Image (cartoon, rainbow, N blue to C red; front, side):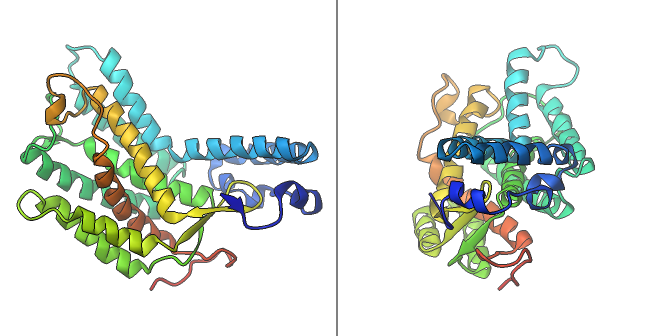
Length: 315
């Protein structure tokens, strides 16, 4: 990953550092009061040279990623805490508590304007898409939820849709936090067709031939030349968009291992003794990422690297 402009330390010495108007954090009321303190910290790092700038930008990157993961991190925390500490005889089943807590978290995030209504719509759509797929996959035995619950559809506790929604929440938030820009981005219409094919394959691959390898190849061709530019601090850094999507899929695979290790859901091979989720599942998460990315991209629009802060018309 390299910057698109001149080196950061040299640039900050000659140009004004970002302030409240330039910070994505200013859009979130709980963080807005820290913007000025962040500006002062950045100025102090720039005055101390390249190593201080690198350390500050690394810290800033980690904090932004953590903030973008807020919804998913809270859900994972609930999985762990309820697995270790939830009383067996509680009047509310563990899965039902997770559902109520997930709804409460979503309401609070909207009330505090931590998510926009457009982002919430994407999350809701992904929640529905995920729940439908869960109902189908549990019905054919791909995985199972071993505990009892009241709020469920078939064999699927209703909190599970929020786990899919967490992926959409992360993408929507990280898009805004890092001021995503793109070059050679594939047409959204083509991504929509690909996403529809991916979803149909998820629902039919136990009856019809599984074409996921072909879908992965199609995604690789579409994204092969695309570059994503993300603003950690002053300048935009860049990386291949395909690599970025793969890294997020890997992160979701790690999160899935937490889900199965806490007994929240189990694959057939894990019912007698827990083991790591096979790495082959990365292909599923990568394809799921394409669906989620496409939904968020349709809402946000695709801004080019040096365009003004307005949406580029959708194809």
